[in-house]
Length: 170
Image (cartoon, rainbow, N blue to C red; front, top):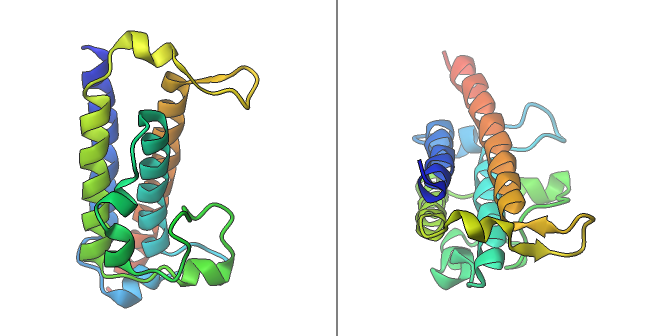
């Protein structure tokens, strides 16, 4: 298996989990939080997509899907256009409210962007330094691993919350 096929496979798993977590949920289910400080399913789905979008756009030198395809307007969240959710307070988490179809539309748009970008990579590009603020400097390969791990963790959290929602509804 070549590196682009491997990366495409890795990134393709994220939207599958996010769809299972949020698909078909109503506003109450998407807003479910096990306590006042926890993240909601809606926030976790949005954040998983936003972080992928922002970080992939950065390393690719392209505009984020969030703005280039108008998802910032479609979702209409009361947040700054550059916001990805890092460091959000409980009140900010509660502001991420949108229909499942729109959240998952954004997930799918980011997945298409990711597939297009990583599908064109070869192994030599993975050693390119993309962030010199760290020691050692971060390579593209390391950044891609970080993106997948972060998005997968959030997708798993959303899936767990979906299980709680489904069981509470019998």
